[in-house]
Amino acid sequence: MHPLVRIGAEWTWRLLVIFAGFITFCYVVARLDTVVIPLGLALLASAMLLPLVDWMQRRGVPRAAAVVIVIIASIGVVAGIMTFVVEQFIEGLPQLGDQFTTSINDVQRWLADGPFHISQDQISQASENLVKVIQDNQAAVTSGALTTATVIGEILTGAALTLFILIFFLYGGDQIWEFVTRLAPTGARRRIRLAGSQGFGSLVGYVRATVAVAAADAIGIGAGLAILGVPLALPLASLVFIGAFIPIVGAFVTGFVAVFIALVTKGWLTALITLGIVVAVMQLEGHVLQPLLLGRAVRLHPLAVVLAITVGILLAGIVGGLLAVPIVAVLNTAVRSLLADDPDEVYEELEEHDPGEPLFPAEADSPHPHNRELDPGSLSTPNLSKETGSERKPTDG
Image (cartoon, rainbow, N blue to C red; front, side, top):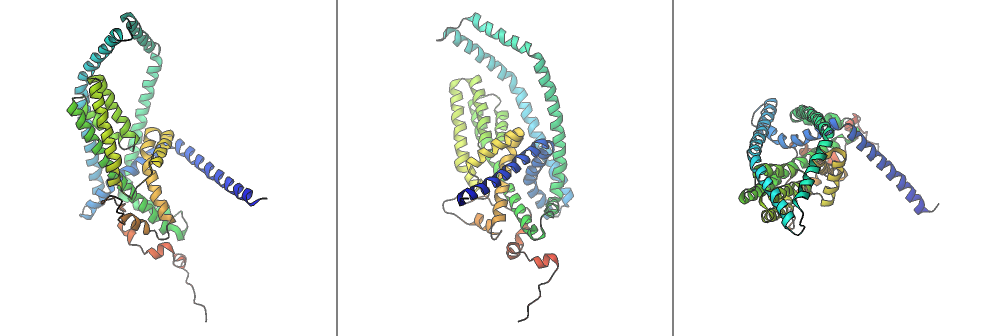
């Protein structure tokens, strides 16, 4: 057999095994989405809240009390913001309805008097047909409402499970990770633990940077909408903030929702100005904020980001798109740490200053600083005799 044929066959069956394993993993994740999604959301929330819990503990607050205080404060802040946004939405809804009605009337007049010369009878007939279609599909609408009620129940159950997991992650996440790594061979445990710690440190840096970028997007677009007098400026800014947690895609889509509202309520000129504001904010995010805040710690190629978001949405919908990029960021750092000759060189690479890079890149800070104090030599070349309890006897000369 020709060597090229033999090598090609060997690589083919290896790739088939890897692909089959990946498909099996995706199938299991899709089947267990009720557990996997709350687990991922809890991990993401713990990356956001754990530094605050550690800070309170260093100030003398018992860890259990710190966890309770942080969670209650976070729930209070989120509930307060949501209440304020909903109130603004309810107050602005009548104005939006009036302006929407006015816009519809303008469109009807344009269809009748414009180049299409559509008669009023044809417009009325189209409206009646639309109402008839809705009435004919009333059963489907009712079924959709029941499905929505079921989805709301699943969301509440998932939220309770997420909160439950989050409490344990904040209180003893390092002990949980240490227990999980006991499944690995003894000689590789320390290396895996450090890789996981560095990966979680990248997740912490990613969450910090994403919150800052999302806030900048929401403030920029929200301020522009308020200046232009577009209704529901604050709810739309909140929508942009939430959408920005899905990189590249989220803020872009939610920004065009704002453009549509501006088009319906204020006309073409305001919509074009809103579109310019959205594009300017996206350019600021992509060329200034993300390189400055994310830096080298969690850098991912845009193609990897888009592919990760696509796979995440296919597997788990919007939540999958939200979790896809953080998972890839963690795996990126963890795998680099595992493959490095010296795991600490991952930190050294991140901390080296590159003149072509921003002056203040985000550092992937580990949530467990004592892991960085481990002896690099013991990590790169573990002492197996120490792990197994045996001593190497010197040979006689």
